[in-house]
Amino acid sequence: MEIRIQAIHFDASTQLESFIQKKVVKLSQYYDDIIAAEVTLKVVKPETAQNKEAGIKLLVPKTDDIFSCKIADTFEEAVDLAVDALVKQLQKMKEKSRIK
Image 1 (cartoon, one colour):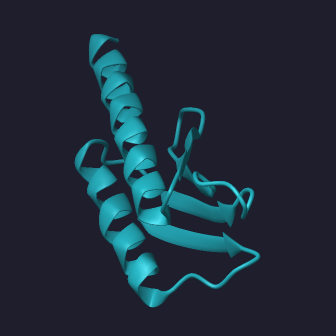
Image 2: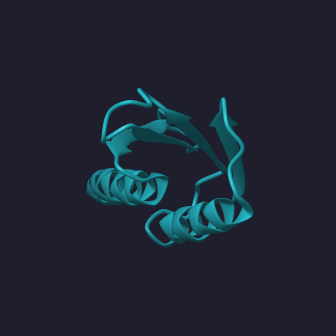
């Protein structure tokens, strides 16, 4: 799986990028056919508390792309929440494909 990380209007640290890599790679355990993942990080409003947004888009063949976007206090927390939401979506998708 190819993972592309895009940080909008700031530079993501290598520590943050490696954290994202570890989390996103684990998604392949839930669905084998994931081609790529696009992770977008941005600061929504610098003056507010929950201002870190992480969006993850998974490119999956034969279906629509799967997307999750979460906002939290830190990028790590936002990525965690987005990955959890994607896990649920992938599990639903896998169950639907078994039924057919």
